Length: 383
Image 1 (cartoon, helix red, strand yellow):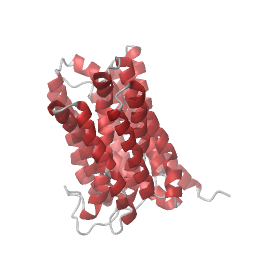
Image 2 (cartoon, rainbow, N blue to C red):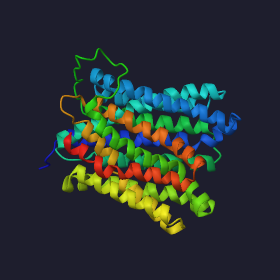
Image 3 (cartoon, rainbow, N blue to C red):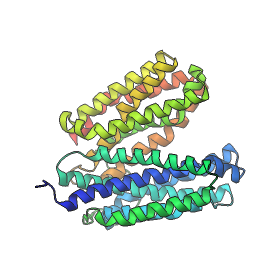
Image 4 (cartoon, rainbow, N blue to C red):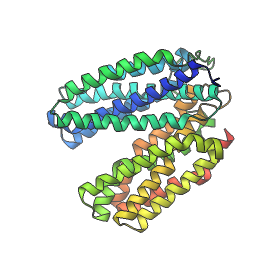
């Protein structure tokens, strides 16, 4: 007989579907940014200001997501956030100017962020019910969804289908997926928070800051790879455009693979040990890229960074959702607030350091922060 009831198995598949949909919807938007920029005749500066709306929306929702989950439950917030994300996606292609696009991106980012925290809280609930680590597999589903969304966007662009119709089709398809799977999520009762009078802006609790530092340092490394890996290969190594594009692909593939294996490794070796080992692997990879700026060593180094960082954020979120005397949604939202601040602020900071020194020197800063995971990983054991 199965050791777990069918409803629990269905709940796990439902959470996987939510992570997949969240990653795919975001990637669909990312894949059509160049065409939307061209359609609105936006300069790089105008596009940057519009994209800032997304970042502000993400951080704003993080500050209230824990309260919403505590009041309404993670299943409801996950479903509503997902539906809003699907509804808002088509409007991103219909905005008449950069200001309107920025406002819509604020709402899009807020819906994405609320869904993100709530589905991670669901992931923690599923972990508790199963009695074993499964969070890394959920984040792997997000990465796979990102690949699928990017591939769909590329196919739509190749077929000459505009962003408007593309986003309507994608939003409709994923709304059906979300509405069909949301009832299968665990019906965890809202958690009472007598000291909080409802969903309001809050700073993360002090107990969450060590975990937040772990997520922050990992997010710095992820942001550096996302925004600077291709630039590093092109400007420092002298690689061609096609080779430069492989840098982030190498990082993404090993990150997805690491997340698929992460749960089994965490159960065998422990979360803190796994994060410490990941910090070592990512540090060695960055050191290889810095000291040997040639194509093969740099690609190998970026792949090592992806493998090393793949399990850090999922395990940090899982630990945050299990902090004693703190609702799971509040814990995850607090750590996500600190971690995502690193993802958003890291790439611009790297650019400023690179402009003042060199891009290789800015990667030394990333190396130091990623290397700190070797020492801060004990936060996962303490919580």
